[in-house]
Length: 116
Image (spheres, one colour):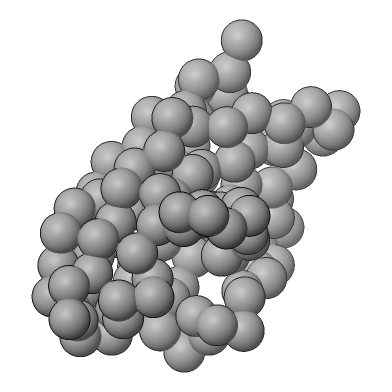
């Protein structure tokens, strides 16, 4: 069973920054991609950004230029650097890991609240 441990959420003022971390118990060599999704109250969960095992990234238009996804293979960790945060970024952020087999795992979620 793959486990994901998230950290880094919190309360920040608009314009501020936060960095989320997600560490997987699975070897990076079995991972297809890891990424971040978010879900605001009353809304569907949506992709924020992901990074593949080959290093390719996919970032939602709503956060392009403000958020950056990266990884540390040695630590089996993916990061989401969030800059210039806006109140509409407020959501629970979830880490997702997809293995080469296609099996997906989710983290427990971390709350990000941006005050205006």
